[in-house]
Image 1 (cartoon, rainbow, N blue to C red):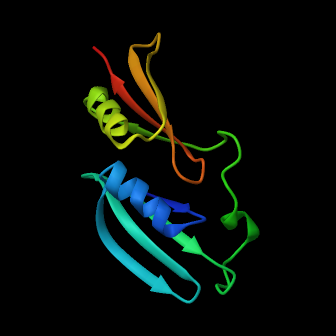
Image 2: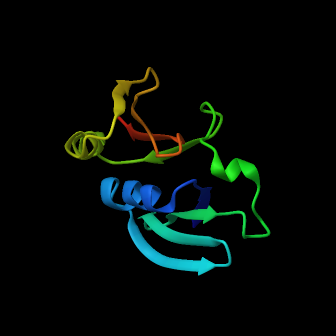
Amino acid sequence: MVKTVIRVRNFNSSINFYNNILRFSIKETWTDTGAKGCILQIDNNSYIEIQEINTENSSYISSYSENVQGNKIELQIQVEDIGYWKDLLTHSKWPFRGPDDKTWGSKYLYVNDPDGLSIVFYQEIS
């Protein structure tokens, strides 16, 4: 199992993106002093945890309130049907780029979450 934690500026915007637009299913939500979070399931063995941590929480650092800069970090998700993700993003009117054919035999579709985190959906083409 893999779980990736993403600390976000705005919890509600991020939950809307990951749950309502990408349709990742909510498995658990939680709150703590100055923090709230949600675990979402991507597939059988992959999860993301969205956390909003504010200045009331002892773990807070200022970068939690900022957008991700550039594409230094990228979340890549292998999918079986890149067309499904293109249609989903088109229908929701969320901006994306692709799918692009790669020389190594994959198709890549690029999107950014509300904080600017780069997400790539890719499909291996045989």
